[in-house]
Length: 362
Length: 268
Image (cartoon, rainbow over all chains, first blue to last red; front, side, top):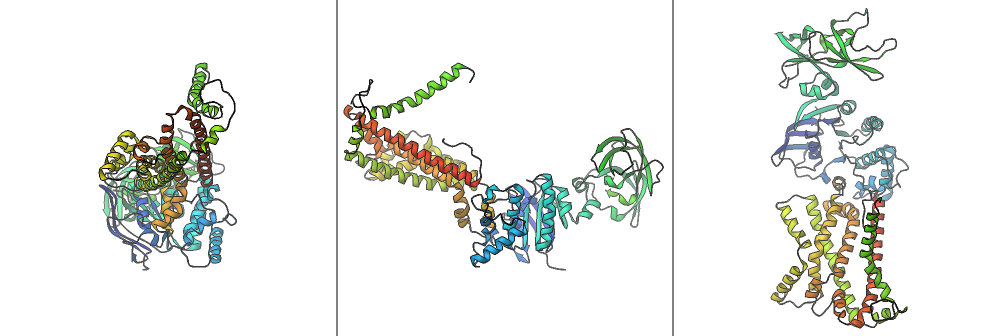
């Protein structure tokens, strides 16, 4: 296997008595779009700053491209950072901002100017070079920050919640642009975010962090479909939980009895999850259940319930359905298709489900 | 402003504050040695007389040397202290900063007397530089207070970004920090200069045979005939202060406009 671009080995970080990073071990591959995802205070930004060299570590080691970074300060690491506030130098022009990192570059001025122009072109800001940095919009600042960090051709680009200051439309546009940019330059990107959707959209792999530890490190699909704990499942998207009991385990099959659904046989691959102290339960995503039409047959299994709440989203409708025999309603999302009316509250509904979509937490 | 009482109060307040200062030019141009109404006639004699007073000229020179030196020294110390207190954590930080800021509230006469005792005890001759010593002591807390807010309002990630882009700690300070806190530095220089220029007690105790302008003015007040000359001098000082303040405010606003910051008040 190739050497990882970044290797974290049992990284520990204390601030006084506060244990901010509790033994982080992970490999980040070259050219990968990697995300650190977690709620605020989980240590994701601290870990990013550790990689950048802004924070010392209490123990463990950080290797970048095979070299131990102990004692190497931020200004000599092959990493560059896009800050949450963008940190655009307000007293300099766009050009001067982008070319700031080239100050110590021995190349002649004309070549440096060309590099700046190329960097501006890469982020779609051709012609903005002479503008004062403070006269830019949020999205433009973001692009200047990107160009400024990428002009040094770092091995790793670190992004600290770079999209959190933008409005929703702009954010979605920048997400796509960032993915394209990353493919174009082929540099390893490490993104810190608390937005699970952003992480799912952009990343090749995601490390979900809670309280200074990596709870799960996987590609977005695995993370979404096979969360390893109830906590991860709760943090990424919406997951319904139903109390369940294990009847018997034979080989790689587990037979469970799920409240509201009944008996089901699932494979051992569907049971990676820890219950996190909540008791044995079965989880499933809202889109894995289907409310059946009048006269439509369930492809696999079927149960019944009552619609308790309807949330209309235009393209989708979310139904909270109380399955017979269960206290708490489950959320089911249905695509709104032509010719099918949105159901009313109180409607009795037949719900189709399949044991393949279940995840067991025990 | 619905209550007439409030309006009267505001007007009375402004009159009390500025009428005495407005009287300065009035009597400075008045052709008479007695400071009383009615005014007698227009004259420039008192201003002309200012040019004929060598002791005044040397007092002005002393004051300018002292004020310039004190403001530069106090601001330099202020930069170090404000930088340390706004960016770093160190043991006993609160205590140390408290001790540095203490002269702000310490009675000046106490500072002056104790400095005098120490200097005489060591056997140092009093001169302009002993006044500079005292003025740096009282100006530094003001300088720190001004610069502290300038450093605190500076986004820490600007410095980190420059460092991340390959600069050293020192070149980051020179290229990023210093230009961005420059309005604060100019403000600190100006305020220290003003404080030092009109400070009396310390100058009175420590200036020895080289009086400063306030000490000179005080010494001249004993002679009634000299009062109109002092009025003329005062007029010049007021005009200079306003000009200086206006210049400083111009630079402050230009600095804010250039960095795209939000104007949060100032002097004018």
